[in-house]
Length: 383
Image: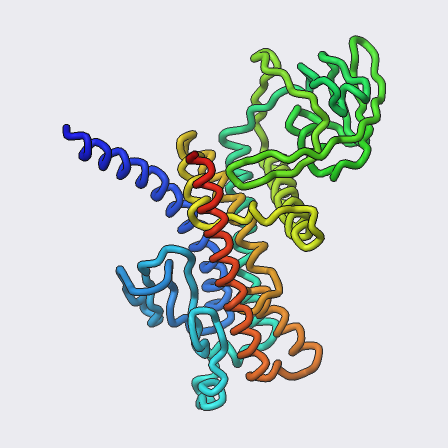
């Protein structure tokens, strides 16, 4: 086969290898988010005019018996549900049309529903994202289980926080700050959320138990997500196969562990967002669609299970982002409803219009910035 054909085929294979996992993950997360809006909207008696996966020109569409247009659109970077009374896909209310509606038409119009109903419809999207993550995590823990490493320290870096604290190879960590640990991953996780504060480790050394106090060191590492700053102690877990074990979870424990995973992701995401405003974190970890596609392709090489776990993590992130109090996002709408409930009247149409324009500009700026981040970071990886 000619060289240019071989190169073209390799490029196409690589492109598909990253694109398909990315589209699968994104479509799943977006579909569940919009389905949350859709189902609660229908439950509240609102007419749904459009349910679209993607934006822009239609690739395919059909109408159901309720008159809802179900569409697959050309730009696969999101989706939307348009209710009766919405001006556009961002659920900006059409105030003029709402005022001009006949009384009979108001019954199934979104702007004419109660504040509680509108808030429930808007909040349903992010809530659906959290539920998707819960289902993915819980089912994975029950069906696949978890491969874990016993919390045994195998090695300690010179001049590290662990070395200064007095750890030795062979120590088994029993608890961190009074919380029992089951695996080395539990230990690493407790250190990662410590923010560099002093931790008390209860360990077993030979036949006796003792406590060691150590203060993690903050280090910076280049990762596929950007510059990652995190606390470390400077010890590593065992790679001995004898210290590996697989844990299967029952329904109750799987559910509890899934909730714990969601709380952990929310906590880390919130910590990062807060760190951006205080200067503790760098903005180069903000990822756009290109880097998410890259990560999806890499994760897909390990199989469907890890790809679904990535979808669960991304679903939590999408849910959180949509709850930010930014007009155009679900959180912005919820702020308007809260103000309406507080003052007894809706925010003026003019104020809403200005807010939505500002929110739209912020969202576009974030997309441009994250895409530029992707370009800079992935270009650096290619060197």
